[in-house]
Amino acid sequence: MYRKITLILAVILIALVADRLVFTTSSTEVEMKPPILRAAPNSELNIRVFKSNIFGFKVPLSKVEVRYVIEEGANLISLVNEESDGTVTVRSKGFEGEAAVGIYSIRSGFQIKKILIKILPRDLAVTGQ
View 1: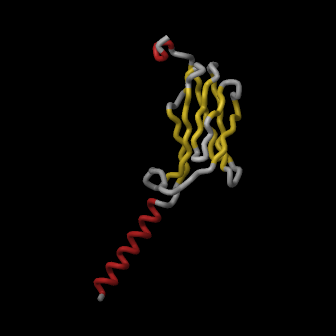
View 2: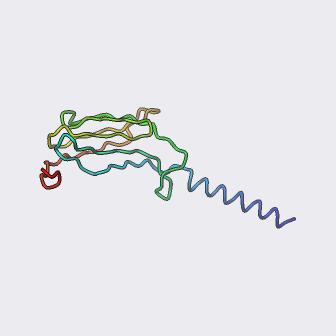
View 3: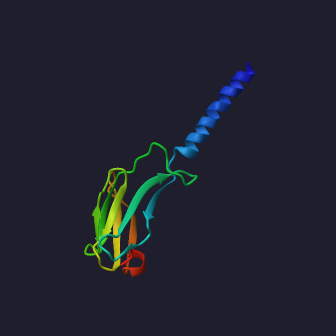
């Protein structure tokens, strides 16, 4: 009798700890791949925003609703393929410099983060021209 109650309480305790550690958001992460753009019209950068748990992994069954705004350098970059799952593709317009993109929450309207995107000169050895 006591063994069954102890087992049930242990299962409940493990479920509560797993909920706290795995399914609870500890921060919002921004991932940029690759970290820089080249000054070429075909150079692209993907930005992804996701909620992370205490272990640093993406929180299962979570969704981040964000809006991207070019705050500085609208003549250097353009936003294409903005998707509802928190990802966007940034495309270079062929000029070098620095641009800033603001990431805003749709629900609250507050800025989550402002990221600086560096657009480096086109490297002829990398592009194969």
